[in-house]
Amino acid sequence: MRVGCGGVLEDCCWRLDKAWPYIGGTIGGGSMKGLYILDGDQNSWTQDANSTFHKKSFFYVTPYVGCDYCLTRKVHITFRLDWMLAFHKSELCLPTGPRLYFGFMFCH
Image (cartoon, rainbow, N blue to C red; front, side):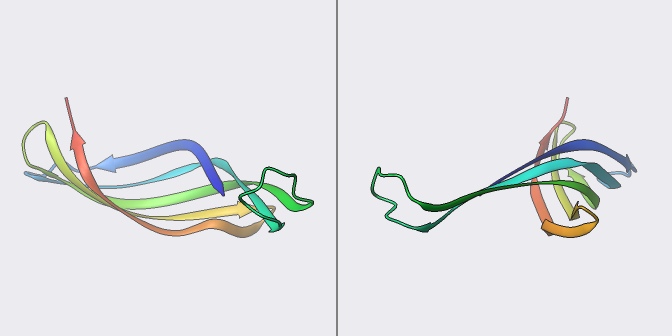
C-alpha cells in the first residue's frame, strides 16, 4: 500500500520567550494505491491470476496545533498534533485520523 499527498499550509505563530505556540491547517489532495494478491505464492515469479490493483484519489483538510520550544536560536524542539480528514466523492475515507509529531527544527 502507498499513500501520497501534497497541498498548501497556512499557520500562525506567537513568539513568546522560549515557547512558540502555533495553530494552522493544510488543504490539498492525494491518492492511495494498493496491490492485493488474493491467491498465489509470493515467492514465485509466475503471474498471479487473482490479484487486484486499486487506486483512490482524495481531497483532504488537516487542522493542527503545536508548540516549538527554543533550545538555542537555531535549534528548537517541536510538538505538533493534527487530525487528517480525507474525502472521496463526499464521503470520509482513509487515510483519516490523528497524528502526533515530535522532533527537532533547525532554523537559520
